[in-house]
Length: 337
Image (tube, rainbow, N blue to C red; front, side, top):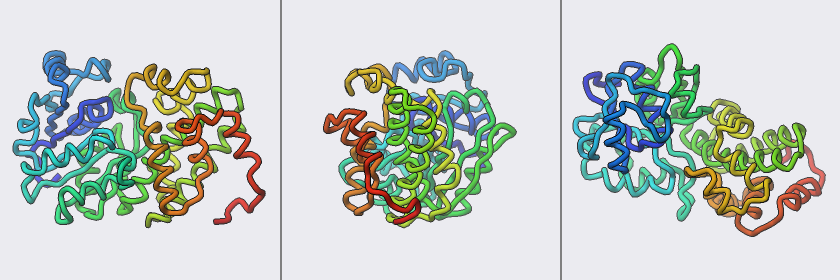
């Protein structure tokens, strides 16, 4: 980054924020990690690892844990936010008075804001204005594997190419490759929709529909993702990359995905509330289904798979009826708009 002596502040000490903090530190960048749970922060300081979320990933020497938010922000020129989408606006408002004009902000938050239908960069601009450099990190990444140092690739998107390149250099190491993009909208739409589709993939697999169904859901889900993204101003090719197809395949096919496991639990006959409780962490796809439903309606974009998941989660439509409704849709050309 621009000043190698200045620490990077990672705000959000869940599994993903912790994994990214470890990776920045592992790649040689001084990093501070902060989370709201004071007891958890104290435990991380003592154990030098996040026992709750990533117990097998010890902290590198240049990763410190901040017990207070002001301590995390002090002297930081780059800030990475890793909180769920419903918490993004509140945290931005909280840190706004502490941000100097030269501080650059990135986030690994995925999803539309539920009440407004805004993407994370739109929320950030509403709260902080248009003069600051922003970036989004996304892609096919499970926190446990990043924490373990497994080979991983992801995308960093920003209209400030220097910032995107600086973040990519600060993350990249022998085990990690970061690519850059200028398509913030496309990268964020990919992250906002893939979790909904992963719930559908878990549901279909849990009902025993087989590999054919899974692949059809992923392929047609990619079409829906792309359709919505292009309507919002994204570049079509973004959805064939890591933040689109890559992240979609990952979350739809591996049981490390909380959203896929949520779908599996629903298929096993559990209620939405029971399935959410079983996961024990935020299931982004649950709230994302409602947000995507609203944004698609607002933009007049046809998204039958995401709409089916919404009806199952919020209107009580039986899973097999959702599948039936998809399979009995009118015949049309595969690539028609």
